Image (tube, rainbow, N blue to C red; front, side, top):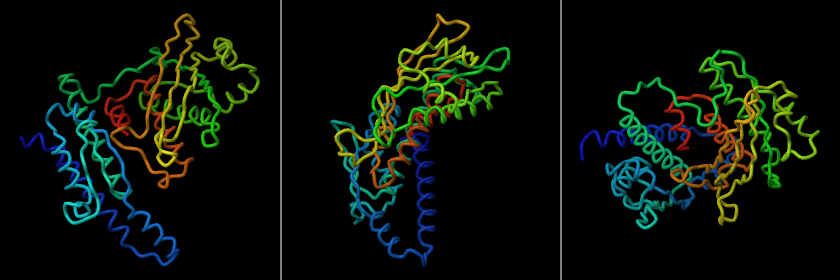
Length: 331
C-alpha cells in the first residue's frame, strides 16, 4: 500500500491519540468533592457497551483503498490500544462480512473516539473523491442551495416565514419540537446568509407560534395568505411526518434520531412555482452508531438531533461551502 493511501489513517491516529492523552490528563486531576458520585461515574465509564457500526458507505467511498482488515488495524492501534483483547484487555472488535458491520464492545469514551475515526475517514475519502471528480475546482467554491435559494441577486432584503407543523402526536420528549426546529433553522439560515453577505430576514418563530394558534386547521392553511399577512417573500412549510429519538427495537435503550419532513417553498412572486422535497435523516449516522441512553438525557439528545437537522435543512435554502455539507452529513 502506498504512503499516500495511509496518510488519512496517520492523521486520524494522531488526532485520536492526542484526544486520549488530553482526556487522560484531565481525568488524572483529583477532586475532593462528590467522591462517591465520581466513583460511581468512573464505574459507569469503565462499563463495556456493545455497538454496531456499518462501514459499507466508508468502504465504498474508499474505492478499494481501504479494506475491513486495514480499518480494524487503524482502530486497534489508534483508540486506546491496550484496552483490546489482543493486548490483554477486555474490549473486542469483530467484523460481520455479510452485513459489512463492525461489532465492538468498548467503553462509552472509546466508542466516541471510534465514531470520530469512522466519520473522519468517511469525510476524507468523500472529499477526496469529490475533488478528483471536480478537477481544479477552487476551495472557495460553494455548493448551490439544494431546494430554493432565498437571497436576491439584486442584494435586496428578503423576508421569510418558517411554518412548521407536527403531524404525529408528539411524545413528552418532543413536545414543541416543531417550534424548537424553527428557531434553530432560523439561526442556521441567518448564519449562512451572513457569511454570504446576503440580506435574508426570518420572521420571529414566536410570532409564527401566535399566528398558528389562530388557525383552525394548519394542514389546509393558505400559504399565500400567510405570506401576505407577514408581508413575506417566501413561506417555507415543514410538514413533520415522523420524528423519533430512539433506535427501533432497542426498548428505548439506544438513541437514534429519525425524521421525515415534507419541505415546501411558496414563492409569493411566483405562486405557481412551489418546489417540494422529502427530507429524511438519521442521527447519529450509521457510521457513528447509536448512543446509549445513559450518556445523555432525552432532552439533551433531542436538542443535538434538532440542531443537526436544522444545519442540514439550511443547505436547502442558502449556498454553502462543500466541506461544511460533508462534515455535517457524517455526524
